[in-house]
Length: 89
Image 1 (tube, rainbow, N blue to C red):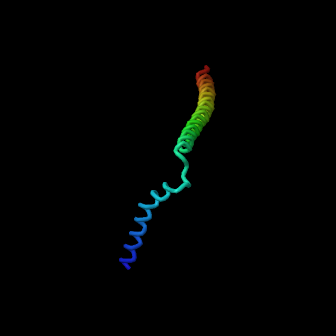
Image 2: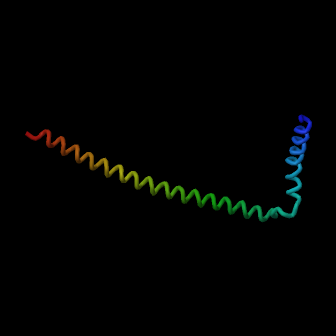
Image 3: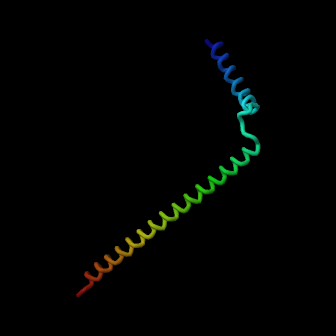
């Protein structure tokens, strides 16, 4: 049982070591110039996504800040009215 397991591990190790070399030698891979273009496009897409996320976050932050400020102003006015009512003679 142990020898069968060791044999399986050896085959797996050989496959892991040899497969990248075999796959890179096959014509299925892209050319070097194609890789450069795809890398550039990936960077462009990542930058665009970051820009959109920043814009979305800024918009939500602005909206929430506005809500908090307005709610605080409303509560301040309510408390001022309470104090005024209590201090009337």
